[in-house]
Length: 111
Image (cartoon, rainbow, N blue to C red):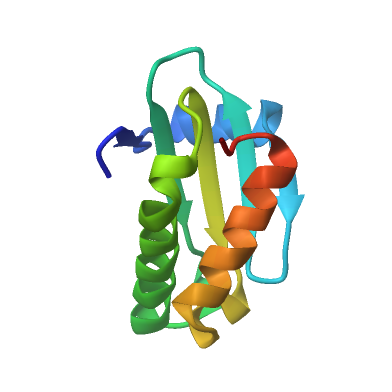
């Protein structure tokens, strides 16, 4: 991820949950907000309802890889949070990538 930083601070997650625009899909929930900077920031979360540690880690890997493949097409200056849902770990990475691309285009975050 060349032009993307990772969101690690709880206050940034909470601010984005509160003020960001959310889109719910069958595979993930996306929170988007402009950050006024020249780079993107990405946060990925999974809850224990997704499954045990192996399933949660797979969900995070799939979401991170889908974002990485789409990164050159995503406009700069956005905060993004991807929240994995139960089905995320059960589908192929290409299905997640296609849905993420469609969702980001709908939000105007794609070039």
